[in-house]
Length: 348
Ligand code: ADP
Ligand code: CIR
Image (cartoon, rainbow, N blue to C red; front, side):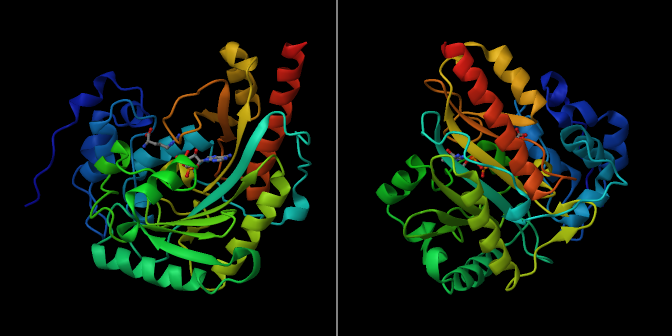
């Protein structure tokens, strides 16, 4: 008989969505449930239990996790994305529908623009439950597909196992590569067998990059200096189209692209700028208010959970599910236009 874990009392002081929605009743309802990949409630909540400072605190192992643990995941998804159980997701990667002239043509505020999507393969467990052979196979198969790309997207695959420490640190420092040792991912089981099966593909200019087997099996990234958001989106859409002709991704009509963290469901897209806002940085309530109106998330520029330095922020769309990719980027664009306008007013 499987042993049922006790209710995690460590959540008492946490403000995560896990702590908010994992009542004793929900816990009792879900604590003996398991998905076909052997994923239990204890696995799904471990990150939030071990890291009480989590914002969310849960991870999935497969599309089935979102059904089996729906009593916990549904309210989290609704709170984060405003997407209800009966809602459907929609996709639109057509750059013609995006109205995003460069908000900063003189380059005074926007340092760089980056848009990424997460993808996972249909029928393969997510990184939280994948085994070593399955992970290695993804790295082999996907890098082979990417190495067949031509033109602007042609590039090289670099495995993390063979990379020198100096090269790795330089790629991380320049914002191209994921960091090692994230404690939220660690306790979600996403760092198992590190660094095996992990790697990065990129073109010569490092404007098109694909992370393999980090938080999601693929993170497809388009980025460049400055604020030409439309160009970055167009490049990403082309790359996604090309990959989609070779690989089948996990997708549902309700949840869109299936990802290990529920915040990434749907478009799985985060469109961001690194932007200098020295005056607004002294008025954090105003900054937060604009972010809320335009559905923006504010991060520091050294990745998630990093803090702001010298008035430079990572500003991105917060919503990803139940809205299209074009809408995600439009949220970010329109919010950035508003932030720059206010920054200019404050400078007068
Ligand atoms: P993700 O975008 O995959 O959710 P992170 O917030 O951890 O994850 O960011 C990953 C890396 O991408 C970090 O090094 C971060 O600084 C970099 N990055 C994010 N947005 C931009 C941007 N607009 N310009 C340059 N680098 C960026
Ligand atoms: C957390 O719960 O804080 C981490 N597991 C990361 C959640 C996703 N990131 C985010 O919403 N900023």
